[in-house]
Length: 107
Image 1 (cartoon, rainbow, N blue to C red):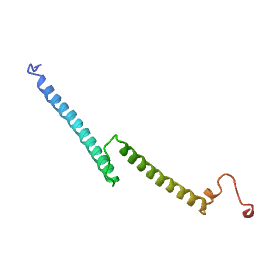
Image 2: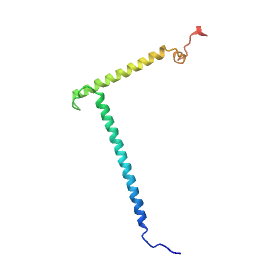
Image 3: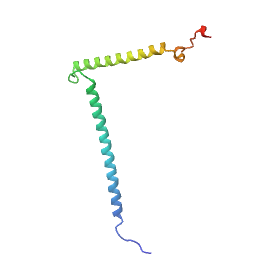
Image 4: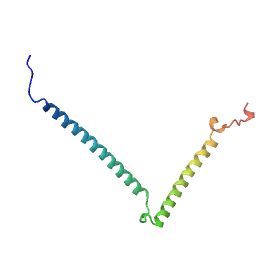
């Protein structure tokens, strides 16, 4: 029986190199994904505000943020109120008879 007495570590070096390439590609891929998400967030945030923004940390910037929050909350409250009003006046019996209330004339 013949045995090969050559350098057995040559194949191991190739596997190590491929493993390092795969790990580096994964790190680069995650970095690109994070940069894309930050850029998207930055673009969305800057496009949502039509006013010029005051320097961060100043009283006027805090006032602007408070006003924007109030406007957003008012819009959300208005949408919720409209939806509740539509649900209350809809012909859907499942939403109009909630709470056990019923009309005896329909019995």
